[in-house]
Image 1 (cartoon, rainbow, N blue to C red):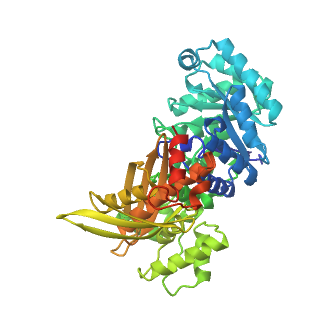
Image 2: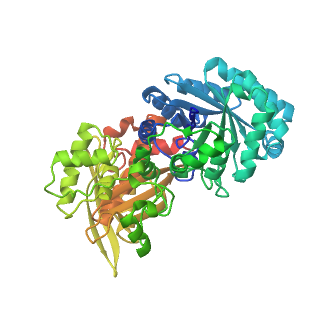
Image 3: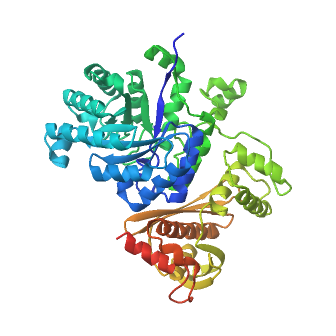
Length: 545
C-alpha cells in the first residue's frame, strides 16, 4: 500500500489575509490568531511582511519568539533591505523561513519592475542566495506566475532552486487561471524544471473568478505538495483560497483524490479546530462569514426544506456529506443558565475551542452570571460573544463605567459617557448627535480628544428572542490605518459604546507597539486637555502620517 502524500498547509491569514480592507489586527490579536493556527496544526504561518511597518516587524518577532510547532515565515521582496528586516524579526523562531518574491509575468516585469527577464532571473537567484546565508529555509515566489511565460518560469525556478530555495511557489496572483489550465501549468513546471525535485512545489491562489480552492486542488492533483491559504478565505480583493474548504475537500473526497493522484493524501490539520479558529478570525478582523459560506457558514449544516429535514432525521448522510462535529461545530444541548456552576461553564468553553487563562476565565464566568440574570437560557453563541466582547482580551486604556441617554423622536439625542482609564482616572463628557449611538461616539471622541473616521458600523442579534444580546462591530480609521472594535450587551446602545471603546483601545494598543506612546496613558494630569490616553492617541496620529 502506498504511503499517503502529505500536503503542507501554509497559512497566510496574518499576512495576505490581513491585507484585506478592514481586516487589520493589532499585535495582541495576531498573537492569539497565531496560537490558534498552531493548535489547528498548520505547517507554516506567514506572520507578516516585516519591512512593511515597525508594527508588522514587532508582531512577527513576538510570534517567532512565542509560537512553537509551525514554521514561521516573513515575506520579503527580492531586495537585501527586506530580507534583512525579515531575518531580524524571525531570529527567535524555532523554525524560521524567509519568503522571497519577485514578479515574473511580462506585464509586471515591464511596467512594475521595469527590468528585463535576464535581470529578473539574476536578481531572484542572488537574493535567494543572500537569504539562504541567513536562514536555512527559503521560499521563492514567482509573482503572477499564472500569466508568465512557461519557459521563463521554468528557467527562473531552476535558478532559485540552484541558489538554495527549498520551496518554490507558483501563485495565481490575480485569480486569472481556470482549474484545468492551472493544473496543466503545475505539470508543465514539474516536467520542465530539471532540479524541481530539489524543492517543494507550492501554490497560492486568489479568488477573483471564484476558483481559488478549485485551482489549489487541481494543483495538488498535478503534484503540488504545499497550498497557501487563509482562514475563511480572507484576503485582498475577492480573497484567497479558504483553508477550511481545501482541508475538508481532501478529507471528504479522499476517494476521488486517491484515484486522481495515484496515492492517498493527508495533512496535519486538526479539523475539529476549524470552526473555533474561523470564529476567532472573524471576530478579530471584523470580517463576518457569509451565512452560506462553505464549511463554516451558519447555514452550512442547516436544513429548512421538509424533505431535507426528514432525510437527515432518518439518516444524516442523506444530505450531510460531512458531520458538524468533524469541523468542531459544538452540538452540546446542555442548557446553561443562572444556576449553572463553574465546572459546567468551563467545560462548555473547552467544547467551543477556547483556551483561556485562569484569571480571564474567572472574569468571564462573572460576566456569564450577570448575563444569566437577564436571559433565561445562555446559548453557545452567547458564550462566544461574551468571550469576544464582554471580557476584552487586550489591555484596555479605557473602560466603560456608565452612560446616560436622552433621546426621542422630537428632541436632539444627548449622551453622557463616563470612562475610566487604566490609571484609574474617571472622565465624563456630554455630546449630542443624530441618535443615541452617534451622540455616545461623539462623547467618547471628546474624552480621548480625537475624532477618528467611523468607516463601518454593524449591529446584529446574537440569538433569537427579545432578550437576545446585541453584537456591535465598528471599524474606525486613523490616518492610514484601520482598527476594529467589538462589543456585546442585551442593550444595543451599550453594545455599540463598548465596541467603539474597544476600537479606541485597539488604536492605543497599536501606539504602544509602534511608538511606545501609550506609556503615558496611566499618568493623567487633568480632565480637560491631557486626559488619560489622549497623548497616546495624538502620538498614534503622528506616527501614521
